[in-house]
Each structure stands twice: as C-alpha cells, then as structure tokens.
Figure 1 (cartoon, rainbow, N blue to C red):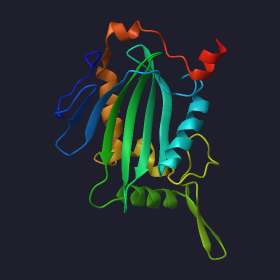
Figure 2: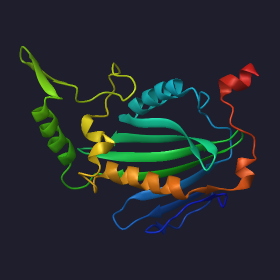
Figure 3: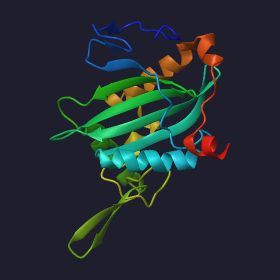
Length: 219
C-alpha cells in the first residue's frame, strides 16, 4: 500500500486493515485506496475504450447506476481508467463515485472517492433544467397523455442505451462552478486533486503491464 502516494490534506484516515486504506473528510465524503493481488477482471485492453464503456454501462445498470464518464488516462505515466458514475439512492437522491483503476498484469490498485447527496436533493437538476428549457436546448414532447423530455438525459457514449440511471445535462462539468458544493462537483474536484498529486512507486511502474483476458489468450 506504500506504492501509491497522493495528497491527503483535509482527509482523516480511518482505522482499518490492509490491503485497503480509507479516509473521510469533515462533510462525510469518502476516499479509499484498494489493492487487489490478482489479475484484473477488466474485459478489454485500455485502448479499446468503446468495448470497456459497453461493459461498464451494462454492469452499472445492473446495480441501478449509470455512467457519467469513462476514459483511459496516464496516471504518473501508468495507463489507468478514470470512472465517474452515479448510483440511485433510496428513497431519493444520488451517490456519485469517482475512481482511478491502475491495472497491471498480476495485480491492480483502485483509488476511489464517494460523495452522497444529503438534505434537499435534485436542486442542480431543477435549476439546470429550467435554464436549458428556457434556452430551447431541452424541450418537452407530448404524445397523447404522455410527456417525454428531449435532449435531457442519455448515456454519454451510447445515446440509444435505456438504462435505469442516465447522465443528464445537469451532470455536465460546465455546471460544476455554478454548484461547487454538489457531490458530483466534489467528486470531480477530488479526482483532479488526486490526479495532480499521485505518485506511483517504480516497483509498480516496472511490473508487467496489464493484458486483457482476450489479448492474453490471443498471445
């Protein structure tokens, strides 16, 4: 667990057992570093991002969750996956998750943040919806007694996907400055801070690179 370093100012580490480390801040957001000492179960090479997005969107849908972002990045020169997802809370509101997965051939690390909606939920969506409706970017289509929102929500990479939880216009990063305390804004801010401060030990950098199951079989 000492192979991944990052800034933890403002976070308090919680008692726990390796191979995981957990922190919380004053408003209850969570930060975790997880080590998995087995080959990652990522189903495709990181460069096959469309295939990975399909796999992740289906998996999230099974958990009543939806994809906000999934991209392949370089984290301190190491290939990694960046994920942002939203999970429906009961009875209302969302929990937002953000993570960096650092897969290697025989192990992986996951750095994750989690932020829940508390109190009055849906305010960001209500304000942005009214703004976009006034601008004409979003509109309501009525067919008989049924109403349908046009251009409001969709999977970010597959517009025809009909999952239980979908990214909507209010989830766009351009609205984070308007709602800096919203849990999605906090997730993005934490991920940006982590990405700019994370340092990965040479032992990890020099370890065998990740090979997806499909590629490994082909070779």
